[in-house]
Length: 96
Image (cartoon, rainbow, N blue to C red; front, top):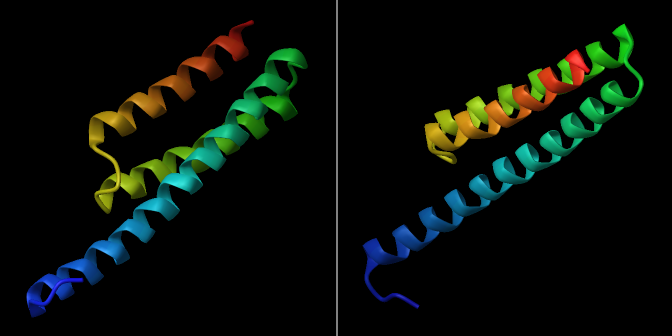
C-alpha cells in the first residue's frame, strides 16, 4: 500500500475509474450480443417486426458506445469499429 497521500488518492481514483469502465464495457458487450441476436433473427425470419427490433437494439448499442467514448472508456476508433461491424451485419441481414 502506498504511503504518500497523493498516491493513496490516485489509487482510489484509479479504482473508481476501473469500475466505471468495467460497467460500460460490460453493458456494451451485452447490448452488442442482443443486437447480433436480433440481426440473426431478422436474417432467418425477414419481416418488418424483426427488422424494427434489430434497429432498436442497434440504436441502443450505438448510444451506449457513444457514451463510453464521451467518458473516455473507449477510443473513438474502437467505437467506430464496433459500430461499423454492427451496421455491416444489419445491412447484410436486411438485404438478404
